[in-house]
Image 1 (cartoon, rainbow, N blue to C red):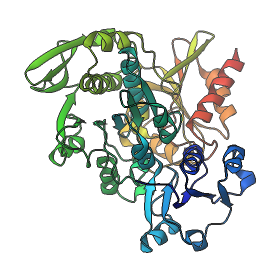
Image 2 (tube, rainbow, N blue to C red):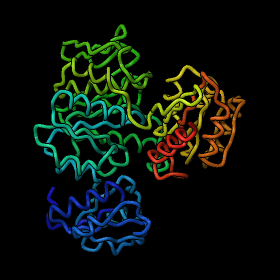
Image 3 (cartoon, rainbow, N blue to C red):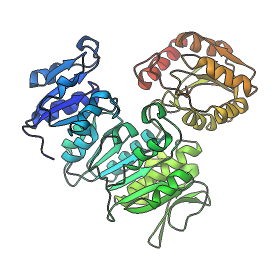
Length: 451
């Protein structure tokens, strides 16, 4: 795709939008960056792109922005159902995501990971395995820097590893990773995608442009993901934590194994993986699969898994206060992710949950809360609905608080060893914070102040 001399409108002045605006301007495009927020309300520094010649259109978005526009590039926060985007499509203006721009610019093969939960841990693991194997590797997408910014620094002989969200997949056209992975699929972001069917279709876009020379790694234990293999044009590789597979990635006699084209490779015993929990076994299986098809040896994979301590904001140990450990799982923005965190502990949890309510079903979550949690502390917009669901589930100790600080202080007053305090909100952060990272950072700062 040619960008030079085109008039391009970038929607959304977040990290991705700002980065891709600068890159497109550098490539010779006439670029306007627009956001519904006023310029003074944008939290990121716009000085660099303004000095580079990117025009700004902030605070008001109407159809005048579309005049003579050849291409629209969407930041992940901008929906394809945005009225301006829908109007652009009516005018037959091409609309793509920032990830599509990255693909068009990338010289190296791409390894891409999507799914409802586990993306960041898996993507980071893959990156560590490829780096340990001596490959020039960049990691980006829905993690760290914008993918369009990362891919420009990697040569043909390197690898780009990308965490890809359903939001980013809304606007892809030709995006084709050499190795793609779909970890799992549970209800999430339905408010954005309008139905579970649409959400699944967006996830499947990660492999629809692949060919027979590419690979897609799918979760055999998740029926919806398993059946994606029926529609994949690439070589389908299944992974399973629960059963042996004749071909694919699986755990047999406590050992992670890869079976492909008649060859069976042992990676390492599950007990040797540093990050614990069944969900992390699945993440390890996928990481090994992606690394395997990129030529990484079993020895390198095993060494990384023995030493990898996890990612920030995902069941992250913060510190010990009066014999009680505090864990930051701010990245759990839906009940399914919080369930995986609860499963990682034997019980005696003081759980802090709540935030912006996605109105997802809470039945399974509250069943596990009743089994594992001694005290449930709720806050944010979701606290009333969560409290009602907890009551229906027969959970006895439920407290509602008005703010984040009150939740941490209450947890400390309740906590006695061997209990643990776990922040695993099962909600997005947007009612109180800009993102889950900020929420997790505030939690960690408050916990350290307790000491």
